[in-house]
Length: 375
Image (cartoon, rainbow, N blue to C red; front, top):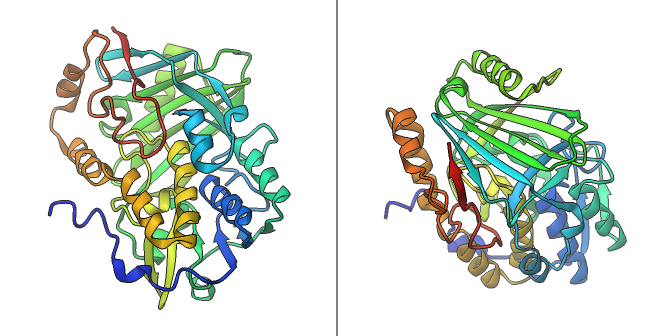
């Protein structure tokens, strides 16, 4: 009963999804491209509409480097696409968690590039999509005014920063994130995550590198003095890591609080994919893995609604509970004293995620996030 408001999949929304061979997908991100490729291979005539002038997302956010756990063999088998060429082995993963520095075993953890560059995962999927004969309409944003014209049974994978959470009346929390990137001479692939009072207590930040690209992101809720906390984080980076990004871009975004595959709006049935559906890790923001799987599920639901429903439930089984736990984390008092006590020097898994990697709805190794030692 406690999950009812977090897991909203109504069976009456499953009608009328099969039949048409012409499919419209909104958003040329990972989930939209994966859905498009799978549908094209099943004989569908697919057109992808994208807000930007090319695949790869907003220039405010990308190019960027993302760290994720991933099981390549299982992912290839599930989505029908071998994404391994776009990933590099992670060499170092460290989390600064208030008073402790936690060093994780980087085995089964990888980094990939996002953005329009030819070395990115987005571009890799885009080239496959073009080979499959998929049509693209760029500079074609989906807005409140154009939403009425979206055909029935379309896939909406436009991302949470598109403003569609509000237009589609999806329950979410507005927040802001600051993004930056720069070239570096560092050849090691590393990721450092930050949870501390200098980023607002329940803010979150990370930096990551791949192939001489270093990127960073800092997330805050709108009710925080985020400009002040951003400056504190910048000072911390410069002081401890001698890293100084020249500029940061601010992006207004939304944090979903509901897991939802189907949405009825303006008298039409839509399928949601990617972060817009709440199908992502609510704790640490890992979205690459879940975006790929979400795109496959959306394609499956268009072809076979019952099987798509079953797959969505299978992969998102733990998400309603994880959303509740993430909300508890935001409001728990004295987290700077309580949270560090969860981390010990033994080779155990990261707290909350555990062996089943419950907060990440994708295909991962069970032994991800083993703690090597704690300072």
